[in-house]
Amino acid sequence: MRLKKLRFTRQEFANADNFDLEEEYIGDLVNYYNRAVENHNLGEYKEALRDHNLAIKTDGQSWTYRINRAADYIDMREYKKAAADYDAAIKIKFDYADAYFWRAYSNGELGGYKKALKDYDQAIKLNPKNTAAYHNRGIIHIKLNDLKSAEKDALKAQELGGCKMLKYFEEEGILQYE
Image 1 (cartoon, rainbow, N blue to C red):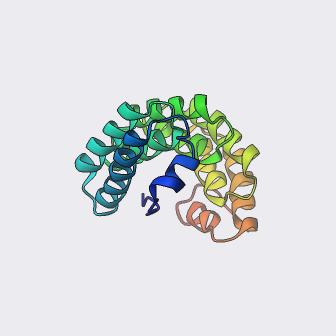
Image 2 (cartoon, one colour):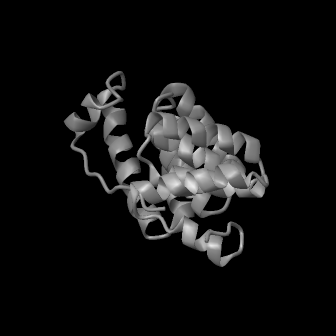
Image 3 (cartoon, helix red, strand yellow):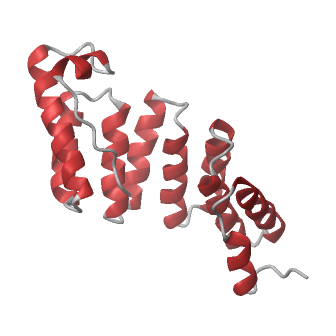
């Protein structure tokens, strides 16, 4: 997963979601955030995690830091910790579709298919054009042996574009077309 590289000035950062922090902490947060994103994108997840932890310790009310720390955990294959960070982020910002998508992904990797389905449903509700959510939900349906729902999601993902799920299902013998 690649994080967006953003550079903030202190004023831009203060105007974002950190308006109640004192000026001295804002400079630290900018440094933690930028360094964490750089390290994450370089594949240095433990270093990124360190700075995301410092940012969360400084400003525990920002959902952004939890989302980004969860991305570190996903890339480290620590799905339980990732899901916990998405839980916390969703409590702060409940209408962010990507948080539901990635929590679903994390729960799917942990074998929590019912939880994953619920979150993919919510991600799709918030962003109905998310091809990847339909694709991934289709895979969860297959794991739950619900081939009819999997096919429906595959068709929707194909309709939205950029998804070769139906071809994969056919090649693997999961679904047969004439």
